[in-house]
Image 1 (cartoon, rainbow, N blue to C red):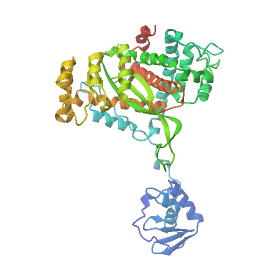
Image 2: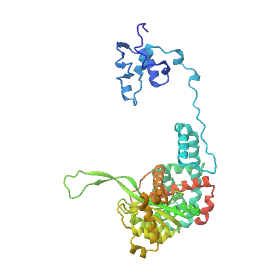
Image 3: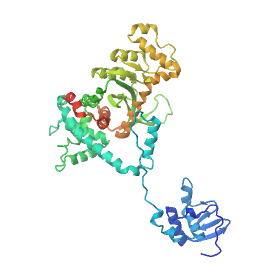
Image 4: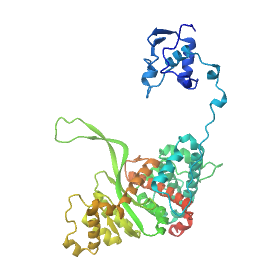
Length: 470
């Protein structure tokens, strides 16, 4: 290097930042040896065709222009290494300069009489995941492997236990091999659990049925499994399976039920336009359905779900389907939570009369006197609903939320969990396929919650479900 080439300034260049570590530094060292680097004066350098403003740490190359935030590019480092050549230690740094990354010890929660606050638990949770996924890659993979193994073994034993009580309902869909209901339920569960296509599911189940593995006896086949999911006779069977998967949570006492609706998309698009108006350009919208669900707030288990057209009223589905189903199954409900979409005097009356439960449903903002004297004299629980109404109107509804309504957000968490783990769309578009697919997703979720409860509380799921299965 010529002796007359000196650094223009030390403002943007410090030796402490040196070291061939990044990709830009490595490439810059190569440019310093091979490229044409010419000083233009005033802190401007030419590196081949790139113009480097050394003092401003900038360059007009694509590397620098595309970086966000702006970072020193290879051309800038070529000038830096030309002005002040790197030392041997910078080119080949010793191992002590780059020690291995040792994860910090995880914070532990001491078991004391006082439970940590919600903020403290959040801080600990953030500390556990801080540093990226790779820090806990082994533990994460081990947890997923254990969960997958527990799920497969549980459903392999669960479906044969409950199938005899439900098998008489299926009058067709037997196939040439006279496929059992347990095998059909198992294949449908795997299809929903992984959110795969039927052909990919067939390949996985053929692998499980391999004579060397022999995890299952046989796979019913692509056509038979898809027909089973679309068949209307499958819907009541899946409803009973869903109720059985939520049965153990009834042993924990009175239940708090939250109801809501959510959209379920499909892969089909419909042409939409306003009829009778000229000049409207055709518009395409995705076809979707609405899932009306009720869950147990304490366990986040789905206890009832119905899939309808996207324009179906949530009030009608609650009155005509969800409440009768919960009553027929004998659920002991203490509180019933729902949002303003279920604001109806008849719904509150029905909940209090059928379940003897407290309906925490907010009134409309313009409600002046929602509890009329005529209604109070007619309804047995009119005084109770009036008390809730005053809680809703007093102190901006803080007492209303504290008494139970704040837990209604759990049903939103439920929808998010199901859509994240098992997909928020359905593949079937005809028959009862959309509703059966949603039921299967909810069954997968309940099985997941059952296995979590067995690990956390140490309960024997099989013994608690034995009498119901029989």
